[in-house]
Image (spheres, one colour):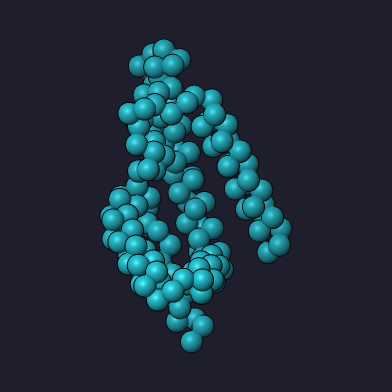
Length: 145
């Protein structure tokens, strides 16, 4: 199990380095709203195809590669969440407790409302962008009772 966790961590670190490298390779365009998440496979393909002047055949092959990579990334994410979900939720809950401990009653209420608003706003967008959506910590709460 430790070997698997080390391997998973290594893969995640490598993926983050690759993502940072890609982010630094070309500055984000002013018209791209990065608050809505990373670019889609189609957006990546358009950027790469334009930059490299790919033929239609090369674009089709590139699309297949990018779609396969996206599927692999989603599967790895789901696998990681299945293994580490309870620990991630516990860490989130602890951080929220610490944050709430430094706020007065009015601030704490506003903080909770902001969190609920953010969840309501982002829930549909995140579910459409990622299979499975955000990590639902409610499924782990019954385990501690």
